Structures are given as C-alpha cells and as structure tokens.
Length: 182
Image (cartoon, rainbow, N blue to C red; front, side):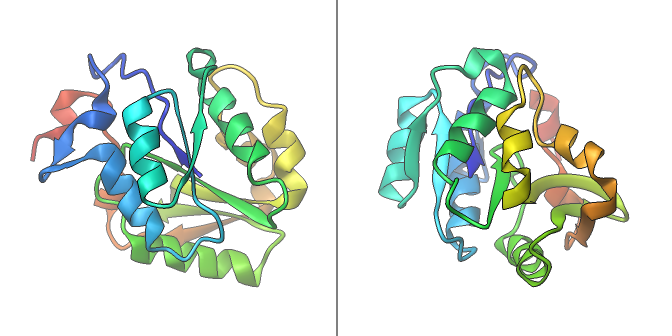
C-alpha cells in the first residue's frame, strides 16, 4: 500500500510531484514497490495524476477524500482494499532512495514470521516502510487523526523485527526542499 496523500505543508507545495534525478517522488515510490513481488499493489491519494499513474502501473487507485484528516484516513482506506491478505506493507511516497531489494528482504522476514511486525531500519532505528500482520488490522482501522501505523508498533514492541536497510539514505524522507540538497 503506497500512501501518497500528504498535503506538503512543510514543503510548500505538493512534494510528491517534485522530481529527484528526473523522476517524481510518487513515481519513484511506485517503481520501487512494483518490483517487490507484492500480492496486491494499491495507491491511496487525493491527487488524480498520482492515481492515474498508479493505475497504469497496476496499482489499485484509491481516492482519499479524507486526506485532510491525516495519515489515519489513508491507512484506513488502504486497509479496506487489503483485508483479505495475511499482511499489509505500508510505504510512504517521499523516500526517494528506498530500494526494492530492501523491501524484498523485509517481506522475506515477514513471510517467515507472519505474526511479527517488520519495519525497515538503520542501525536499530526504525523507519518506513513497515509490514503489519492480519491480526493487527483492527487496530490499524481504529486509528484517527494524523496518526499512522507507528502507534500500533508502539503498542506491540515485542513483536517488532527490524530489517536493516542497505544504507541510511534509504530511510531519508523529504519534508522540505532543503531535504533534496546533496
């Protein structure tokens, strides 16, 4: 599940349309997830351009009319399209250097231990994306406001397995234009 509903307030505009190395952030995220061998791909966004691009790449487009509520609206909407799966990976669209290889490693760990929560990390510090098992879907669906899956992870620290990214750069996200400077 690709979350692409951010308002870009700190960035000053819709950052997901900003190109990094010639490719918009949302498209980089879609390309990364598309190669990971996920059973179902979906993109949650209020932006028609992003939904159309996702559909062309095989993502189920989910129009997020509740984006102003915050990340929980995206989580609930995305989860509604994934309820029949054993787990759901939630990924944000503003990590331009996230790699498909790291996602595949995390998915491999999750498939071995399907009752665990898995999150990409760097040197023990949790980041995004994360994979949640089916038994936590109810907790995810109950989230409200600008609260994401991290709240569920905090309630279940004993179930969290951190999967090391290939580099710290993979976990870096873009919040302001300065985050794009080398």
